[in-house]
Image (cartoon, rainbow, N blue to C red):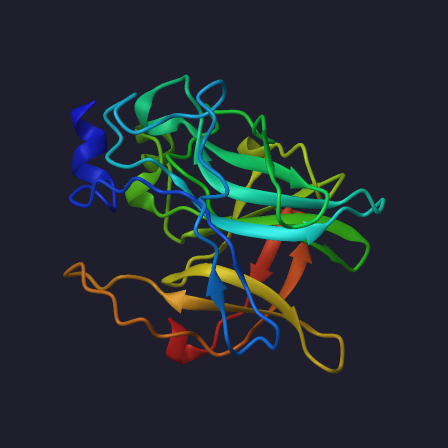
Length: 234
């Protein structure tokens, strides 16, 4: 639909994305492996040209060990191969026994939840809760969800397992400050904090500035994380 092209953040880039792998003996020197490791599987995921969406979304891998010791999981920014063009965002999924060979699996969430894409997903166990956090700004929400949206780009929800499935429709905004691509970390005292990028300026430029650590806590009334940003981040 034309509305997608007007609102999508990446409307002029036409990205075709894939996920590769690099290895290092010391975390300083890295060697990119020549073979592409992962591409979206058309059985479940949209490929470039399947809709009016201006990219093939397949990025932001979040890799973690299976809690039961059965290899590794990867969560991926992806889009389903069905649904309205502006409402196909899903959490993509792949698994590996060794971090080298990967198998693409069906998505861990359903399209139709109000998101054109779900960027930089992260799962974490925080104070006895299992949480998913991701980012989606107003320009890449579905038209229906955007009409009810009052600001913010980082979302979270509670889930039963680190590896899903995820009820993305239940997600709520973490902060209305202009922050994006949030990551949760703990300081030495055990306090949970979020660090995020300052979102694009009103003229569309992006300064690439990372926020100061923002304290976060779970708000049971909202069913979401809540952040208390410092004045410089507002």
